[in-house]
Amino acid sequence: MVAVTDATVRQTAAQRSTPQKGRSPRRRMLVLNLVSVAIGILLWWALSASGLRLPSPAEVAVRGWELLVDGTLLSDTAASLTRVLIGFALGTLVAIPVGFLMGWYAWARGLIEPWVQFFRTIPPLAMIPLALVLLGIGEEPKIFVIFLAAFFACVISTFQGVVNMDRTLINAARVLGTKDAGIFLRVVVPASVPFILVGMRVGLGAAWATLVAAELIAAQAGLGYRMQNAQLYYDLPTIFVGLITIGILGLLMDRVLLFAEHKLTGWQERR
Amino acid sequence: MTATTQLADARISVRHVRKTFDLKGEEFVALGDVSLDVADNEFVTVVGPSGCGKSTLMNILAGLDMPSSGEALVDGDAVTGPGPERGVIFQQYALFPWLTVRKNVEFGLKTAGLNAKDRREKAEHFIDMVGLGQFADALPKMLSGGMKQRCAIARAYAVNPSILLMDEPFGALDALTRVKLQEQLLDTWSRDKRTVVFITHDVDEAVYLANRVVVMAARPGRIFEIVDVDLPYPRTEEMRLSPEFAALRNRVWNAVYHQNP
Image 1 (cartoon, rainbow over the protein chains, first blue to last red):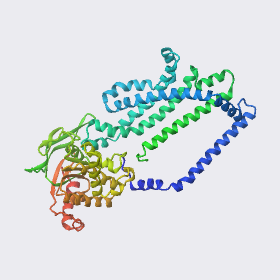
Image 2: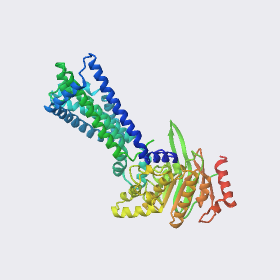
Image 3: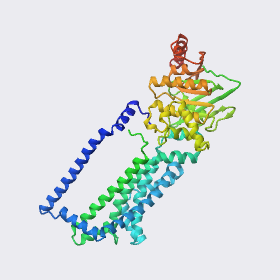
């Protein structure tokens, strides 16, 4: 822990105590964001009107509406989200204890780290051919590669969180009479939460990216499958609807985790 | 010159403690042959240049580190780990940043198995003692350095240790806050006596607080001289400015800064 000078305390206190002043720049940022989006859509429109083989925003909106009404968009989204959430949840669930084990026990680190370091350099997508051969073409290979993507992002981060934690906090707990189990649960775990959440955000991003690619290769439903299918029929509006949906969902999931991060790690001193 | 004192009824006895570290294959002697006795309810300050091993000595007394040879005894028993009778206050406060002031102070009480109601009452008492009543539900990040250290002091006091080990507790604070906390510490100590070993690099602080000032020397870390401070308690501002204080201060200063090995 770094000693915080009075100046920094005053500074952060000042930042915190001026929500009134903070509001107007925030609103200005929002206006700028909206202007930027509007300009982007206009450019897109202009490009599609200029004879480039792009669907216009209106065509995409209409197709989006059609897909929404006939239920395809929802069932595809549900299929994709289910896969990503199962894979992500499993990956995180395994990664957190493994990360703690590696950070806490030198022997566990020695045994596990070579495998983690080796396999995390292999893009999860590169595992798809193997997964298809070993696990068939059902849900399992897709969930498996998503699991890998989430697992490696989260395990490294959790491990770093334990290794980098402030040793004086452990000493402080020890001199207050706390034994190993208590130190782990009451000091190491809370101190690692910020690292775990960062790992989860990176892991979710990786899982989402991997999912869509996995669906492009072998699936009977899902956003990636829909786009792959549309490609066969030169159906550009459907591809656009897929891309936009993937982007929006990814953004939403990231925001949910970001919100959780703010709620759970608000105690951190921001430097 | 090696100075040692042997007391018949020592609470803390350091007997021929030696501590070496392996530094890139070479043996680094953090503590040479250190022996020191601290009496019950005594306030001892330890001052010395950096590298004299004063923090190593503190860690050994706290049970966070073990001597390479020799032993540290508390009430006649060899120290093998931290114990509830020894409270430790760290320079970097070491507050749990995710816990409020109240929960920080309750931490050791929870370890001791007190129920929620007793914990809260006890914590309340010590939070008031250090004057943080208004900030009981604040997180450490909202506190200034001085307030953080007061919270750490309340946390240490809450488990009621009879020995307080303080490792440069006011070292990171500005001069004004430091003087204020020195006053508060002495005030608390004189009302509710405990045995205190207080590490510092500040000669003024060492003399102002102590019954005895232990001056250490570096390379190897050892006790250089022990200076008795025969000023009565309570110590006052006038005392701080008195010629007697100045004489003691000069003596300690010379011992720290003009050590002839």
